[in-house]
Image (cartoon, rainbow, N blue to C red):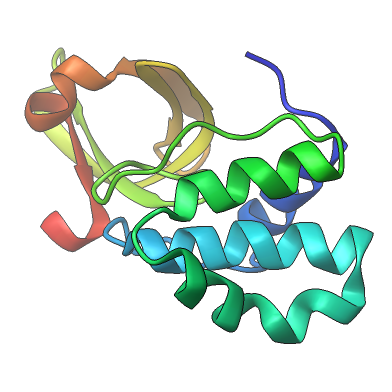
Length: 144
């Protein structure tokens, strides 16, 4: 899938130390607050202060709210977030099957449905990890 300009700019901020923290285990509310705030900062800065109230109004339907906002500003939405999912910029540990060791300096660089691109070994290596193998070869920062 492709992201439009808002997604790329938001993720570039995440990768380079902007919004978000790379904890690996964020609540849905935190993730959607980051997404919605980022959109409003770019397209309607006057609404940034109302994000919490808007989210309270939607309760557990945060992805629906996010989709409505993306539609309003004609933006391509990111996939629905579920707690435990990885985000670009998250710190991870990567298991090397050949060397039989864990690299604890990994960072999620890109996300596609069902897989993530991880850079590790002091930025010297990268590989796509299928989410099906996550428990065996990929851990979030909170797990190591």
